[in-house]
Length: 300
Image 1 (cartoon, rainbow, N blue to C red):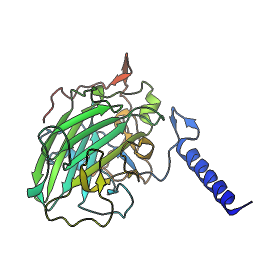
Image 2 (cartoon, rainbow, N blue to C red):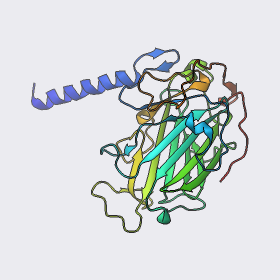
Image 3 (cartoon, rainbow, N blue to C red):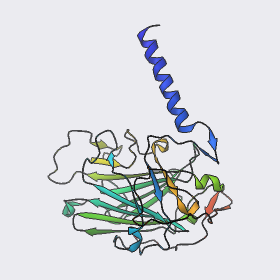
């Protein structure tokens, strides 16, 4: 057997092993997890924060912190300005608090409507871990412009989302409340109690005076250029739309439990017990509803 054949055989075996780790076997309504991807836990809190872009509500002291962001294509941990993400849930919604550290706040770039080469964050969520299922995308920039999509279609609209941005010394901030009733959820409780898929990406365009980076400058099809793009679970390509590379999220409101030693942060107060009294309703089209409505107002 020639060297090329040996290498092809080795690559095929490695790919098959990775595929088994990622997708092999079913248990409790969801597929096995790929162990190298980051994992997070959304702890249940009693009430949602006031969504005003300020991360000063008590709820954020009970939230879990995600592990550090890394460049979307290669590179070490801690590259670029730091991005801190806090996550929690109520019985009716997912909660995100994001702090984008930035020395150059005076030159933040953000349009009041639409998106281009802006300072922005994007959140990708797939409820459950079943392959080939569509996922949600929520985008907000430093000026407060907000967009959402499902299955890569902007025709879908999560009307109850509350989103706001703010400024503090050395950072711009995001608060986001996503009602479960606005999401497309599977009707199987075992799937909802298992791992969901999650990714969060930060885009930072070239600011005046920035040095040309030594690594990749991401350029989109429309010519937008980013000095850097970092992610919680890097896709290692120039596309963010690779759900098999998203990390894992366990949502306590649906009975999810923190992954042992891999949750990417703990709530600041240890809470006993677990909550399993949330059941997704299922309406025609597969839209699941949590038992509580966290409001129908969007704060741009």
